[in-house]
Length: 185
Image 1 (cartoon, one colour):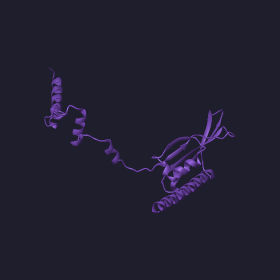
Image 2 (tube, rainbow, N blue to C red):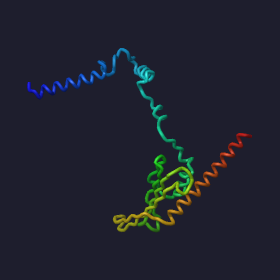
Image 3 (cartoon, rainbow, N blue to C red):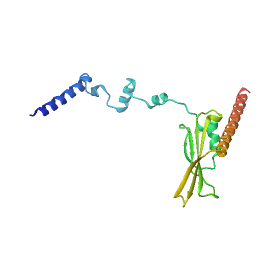
Image 4 (cartoon, rainbow, N blue to C red):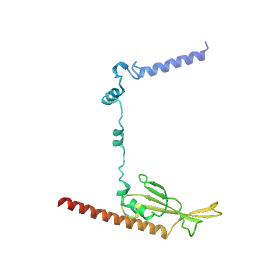
């Protein structure tokens, strides 16, 4: 037997003894006689002894509380303002709405795409980041130039969303007061 084989065998047995010493002489799984044969009873016993996990516990520990988009005035207003455009991606928890490319029938070689990022749920001028992209194509969409639009359209879109959101908030507040008054009577 060569010395390299001897060293490999010694190293192998050293590793095995090292791992087994960490188990205090017990193999993983323990004594099978101590566990019920019925899987349902075994699960119950493991949960009682704290050796399992429940999906309910993991849900409780998650961070962040998100209201539904239908109760968020900025989201509702944004979706209402751009309702004529096809949506590409809407991610409420990520705080972004992205439309697909849209063009009217008068200019089929030119289209726009809108991205609305929500920075806060409060209705204020810095709550939204609106970006509008322009695509001008020639040769039936083979040669296209893309650019980001700045200017009146972006400002007007943001203004319209904020106005609508303020109206929704006011309507909701007055609805809440009416329901409280009905409960008192």
